[in-house]
Amino acid sequence: MSTGALIGVVGPSGVGKDSVMEALARVEPSMGLVRRVITRPADAGGEDFEGVSEEEFARRREQGEFVLHWPAHGLHYGVPATVRGRLARGETCLVNLSRAVLAEAERLFERFVTLHLTAPAEVLAERLAARGREDKAEIARRLSRQGFALPEGLGRVIEVANDGPLERTVATVLSELQAGKV
Image 1 (tube, rainbow, N blue to C red):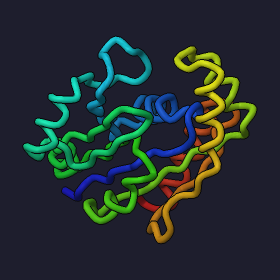
Image 2 (cartoon, rainbow, N blue to C red):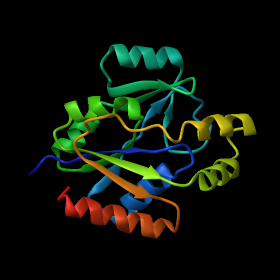
Image 3 (spheres, helix red, strand yellow):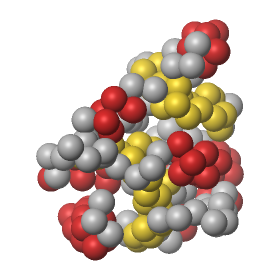
């Protein structure tokens, strides 16, 4: 059995990372979602995640329970080390990552692909407003970050516009992954 691939999904807030990941997992049985650990209340909404306190997160980080971790937007995010076992069993895993850990992920995982989702600013603004988690000032801050580039030197990057029907985005991603034999 071959080792599964880890697909790190990145893109600006509001681009639809979680929607695309969930749709991919629904239509492609060999793909599974990685449930991140985040220092925010479990009832905060959005993606399916494990909410923990700052203290619990720090304890888990110190005990090596995260294969990747990073701070962003006043929170801490972690990818459980259990993903290694899933990959060893041949599963392709989708995980919402920060651009800040892409190079590290590429070093850690032999079969790593960055899926970079994009969308025009007006689409992002509309989606952020619709989800109702940020006020106008926070939405403006998030939109100001949308143009940041990916780190230099990444090996395999697939860039897909998620600015239309979800089905089109999913079909494009699957086609790109198949072309690269992931």
